[in-house]
Image 1 (cartoon, one colour):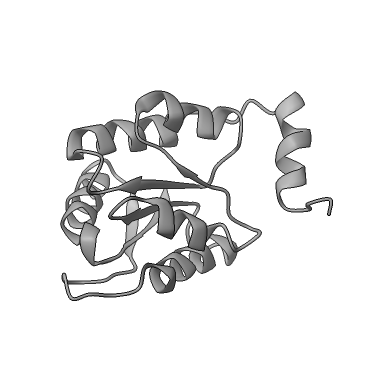
Image 2 (tube, one colour; image 1 turned 30 degrees about the vertical axis):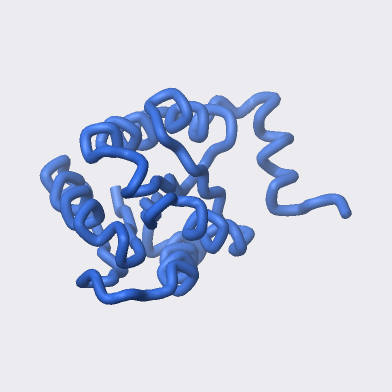
Length: 145
């Protein structure tokens, strides 16, 4: 699977470890940066990740920052993206099963590396349930205001 991964400076170590692990699992991984711990703005990297999903260069995305909150908000600004902030296997699984999430977001300061791997594994192996959930997912890109 083609997976894009991005972070801010607070999550570069976790990003590098997860990117290497995903490659070991046989995935094609595009690291969208940053490459070091120099302070950066998470929206810039969230937008890069969202663009990779929107233009089809990646099928799924992994977004990381200190808490996972800021970068998930940035990714979700793009209507092609459904980023879910998760912290455990169940939330990762339900993000796919019920919400057809195409980006998983986590906080490097809140989630350990083994939990992050467990979340990503659940995210990548769970299928969208469709049915009654499809109607709801359709509304995510077309809000009724």
